Image (cartoon, rainbow, N blue to C red; front, side, top):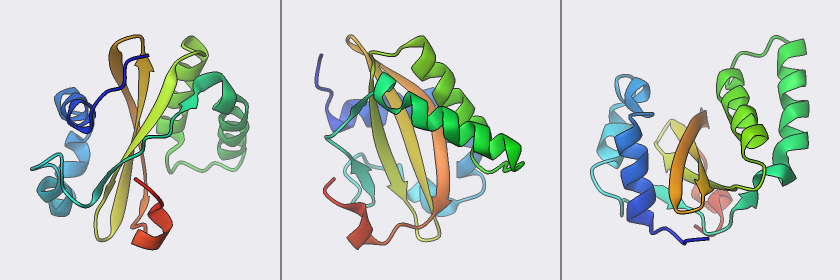
Length: 133
């Protein structure tokens, strides 16, 4: 498959408007998205094949539903649906790490196209835990 540049992932994410609801609540995110080279945007070279993570994400979704956990449930459902529909796609992560919150944008790569799937949110990730980006 085609290897996309960081700028191409960044452009696909911004043009999808998937971060729009978060921009209203987090001014730090608005600052991050001014440049694809911002130090707090992490593009991971490693990716996974959809069918490899589908079983564990289905289990996570069942657990979230049973426990009535709403945080990230909709995003997890969107991701599971995409994985089921495109089991051979490559799944990439771009993390926007703000001071109090991070936004992990999951993208699927099918042939020569980037599909922006969902945003998984949680607290700020300390730099030492981000690993190689």
